Length: 363
Ligand code: SAH
Image (cartoon, rainbow, N blue to C red; front, side, top):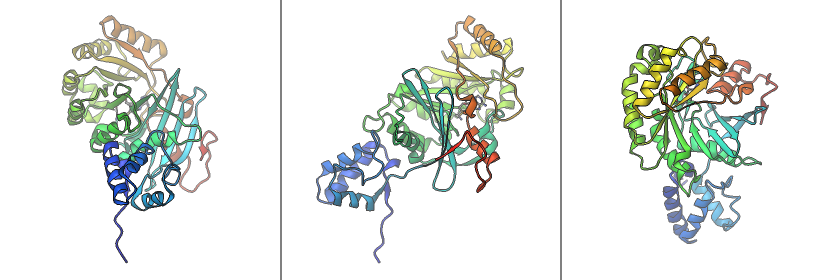
């Protein structure tokens, strides 16, 4: 028997690399390099589900593509829809890991919140993903694949914005995330403007530096959540390795404007002294502050700050001359905060048991 080489996963490659490989392949099969470019156009936007459905290619060549390349699908394991239009998707990967993707329509924008890791190692005390621990990094094909899968739905979801605010810490998976950024942004990939793509991080310094090196205008959001080391260490153990001051300095050195994310924890980080301190930090790096109402059903026994409390807190920050917004809480009826769908399903539905939750549609 002749040994067959492993098939190349086209979804793990930046679009230019995929096109080059495909052109060489097409030429080697005697169909002309342009056929390779033709295939490349079907990978991302709009995507073709498989090579067989690329009907503008000769049938024999499609079979040859099948033998040499793969474009693996992610299995849609569950979907939830919120009354506010937010949709949450649970994808099952080849090894049984499950990850979440959320689509959030808002006027004529559609933001996709994507996952970069299965689980998370950081254990932020209020976060559902932190509770489950870390399983593994996702491949580029599994991160960008989330966007591709939504584009392959019978009614395709086409995002205008992408945020890396699903499960995991994107800057602890930079090897894959850097390829994904190219795929999402490249005109021959998903073609989404770099300013519409936000990487959210707890403040992994080497990762922030790597992102800063990219010539594209990708946006950076920092999960600050506490304005002092003492409090931040309690909420976010990663603060021991990357202390607040160094994270703030990295944000200040970042060539583009950054956003501070600040989840409002009742009686914990929502006092006027916190607002003053947070405003000072934001001023130091010209950051925009996004106040996030605590999503119920995360980890820990926190209570959300009241709506009036959040408004008051925002007012105090604004008075310091810092731009501030209160994030609309979306999908609260479907547990759409980071990691919640997976946690909920693990809790409520042991493997093999029938689905007990009427809100979850099994696809
Ligand atoms: N690891 C990255 C990205 C994933 S989390 C980061 O931490 O930035 C995306 C955002 O959701 C973070 O700001 C995180 O702190 C926030 N988050 C996690 N659990 C939450 C909850 N229960 N309610 C509101 N926001 C939450």
